[in-house]
Image (cartoon, rainbow, N blue to C red):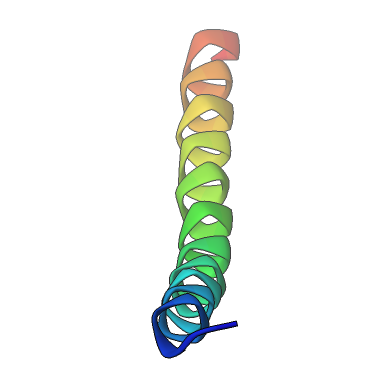
Length: 43
């Protein structure tokens, strides 16, 4: 492996580690908003 490969793998790993919790919060936010709409619809 040359240094470019190592740098790319490190960058990709860092991006995945940053994006995974961000996606979790994003989907959690969508889930909460959808449940809120359902609650309003039931009222």
